[in-house]
Image 1: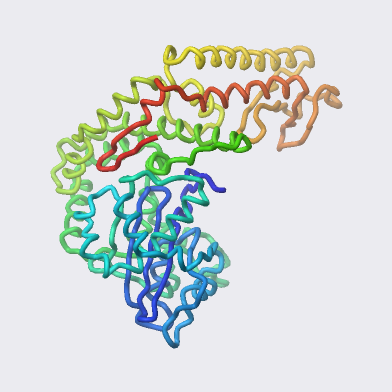
Image 2: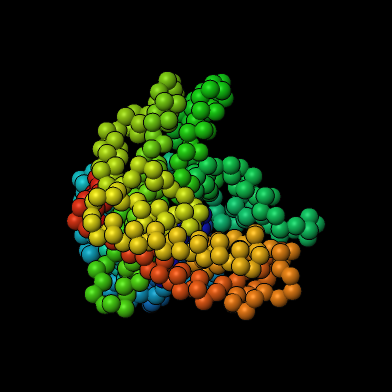
Length: 481
């Protein structure tokens, strides 16, 4: 099972797809990264399913869910066979037609949507969008079962998508114009992705910006008011160097993975009763704590962004300042995090630093048992470094280092130039890595095992006092763990 936070820049969409004999197709796309559900329903105008191909090209899903039976209009192959032909590299899941229940889908959307049903217009659109609601029922059921989560009520951003404000570029044109991927060219004798328009323009600071750029290239905007608002914003950035470079500096303060915070708060892990799954449950706890640290780091960057945007004159930047920088809810969330999480803890991508920070994220004095466990953890950590110092002295290896990664844990790294003859028999699991030798020892393996156990306990420890920082209301989304 793939972790919810492990999607990177790859697709994070799960798409449900269904059709009827009237050439209508319903699509439900769940974005695991931004905790959103996009619904659309349209009439397929050609036997080649050009509209459906365009939608699939846009979402670039990692999983497509379809019903088993071929229920296609005359002269059309059906969405199941279409997926086999057009998305052969994408995982296809076939679910029973009973899972595509539009009544169940409508109930789910009402309960999961952050907005009220009246704001979504679901009561009036129910009959119009019954196919995409059926697709939503199947997509939600599969996501919860496969990922081992429960989607929190009133947490998803639900949208009913239409083509009124955007252009649709068919899949053939996307390929021929080299918008996302370059065409294979024997004349150029290169497969460099930089030849595509998308990769030439991709200078975004965060993953969310990269995904937004891709979306705008595949479905260009045609709403004149929004286009003019963007152009006004661009004019201000080009004419005001202080604003441009200040905004660029402020965006660097936000973690690249900021947009993944929501998914770990909106997708609640199912309760585990089987002890066999304890390791998986510990992993989920670590992910949750990492998300809180990530959220804290993003909220810490807001004051600088507020300072930069305070005097912005364009409508778009001004609206961001009012809706984000002046939103009191973010200050409230930051305050509640500060009650339990240590102020010095910041998001980092270095594995050893990240895991250690998870262990020490909760402030001292919150829970006595946690404090005792962390003291033992520090003693074990000191023992590992004392062992490294002993080996440096005993075996005359002054440049011996002791790196850490999530797969191996601690190991020794010794430059080859420092090794005279063979390594002492004390060193085991010896392997060459570039100009270094990587190895371990029975003593290190023993102490490292204790270290990992302490680390898992510290990062997954839960108490009533520390759990209170994990209850938030972010915007209109109720986030509860």
